[in-house]
Image 1 (tube, rainbow, N blue to C red):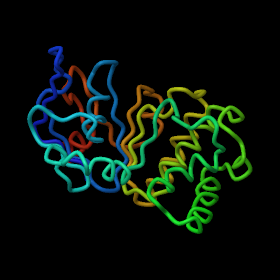
Image 2 (image 1 turned 120 degrees about the vertical axis):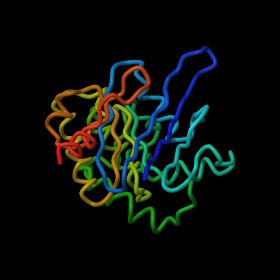
Image 3 (image 1 turned 135 degrees about the horizontal axis):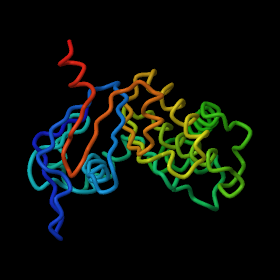
Length: 227
């Protein structure tokens, strides 16, 4: 579960990125977060990952109050979340297999478990035949699939995808969101930041719209009011 309670984030230059934001994302939901450039979407994600701290209010993720979390606990907390970035962030001199395996090796998972999990995850994202390929031998869509497999390999309950389709062709964007959709059906919570409104319209999920640091629309609340 993700919960923001009256959260305000102001940067040292005076920019108010979020202004008294309150929202709740329950376990198992698939939520799109949309908004124009500079609306506050990136700050929202940074607060969820404890890359930034709120000036006021409470941010809770998976039952943990991030404002009170000691620094030494942050790396372990982040490893409990699957994170997919727009720029893939793959290690260029490693194969697809090793890029995914790396996420397990840093948590001291046994070799036997790595050999079992990595092929399974790469097969899940349709890359069983590309395990030995390095990033520059893969298309943009394939690189994003490797990044998705890496995010999934530790079996997180939450995946945060920050513009995951921003650097791939439009037709491949649907494939990536389709994959996230299937993963969500397994009970994994998905929070996806995007500016691609056609994707949002195609997939019938909750949409939170942010503008000028405030939540201006939440389709869940709209549906509740209709009922």
